[in-house]
Image 1: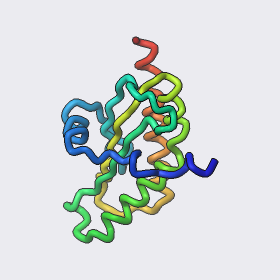
Image 2: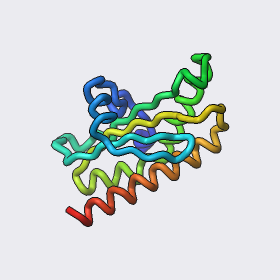
Image 3: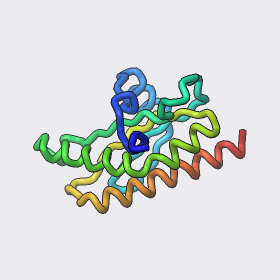
Length: 138
């Protein structure tokens, strides 16, 4: 059962087309320090084993000149997501949906992991709430 907490390559949002699409057509909201872009669609996935969310992270070079700092923040965001993604993933699967999501760190200071973890918790709860609302309107 260890597998479900991993963050494997096929859960990463790599396609430039998909990312561009996400920034142009997706919805967004902010839970400081994280700016969230997301797009949900009906899943065409027949493969039950695949995780229904593809994610990406980014940290602007404007506030963080050093790659080590940017990489640290990206690791913190990915890790906070990895530990807390399962309820959202399960919800999407149940309703045969899939999601692209992109987390942009938009804050001038390097926040500790605990702060990023809490923001991510709020982000994922908010995404769930949005999904639940949308389903009621379908």
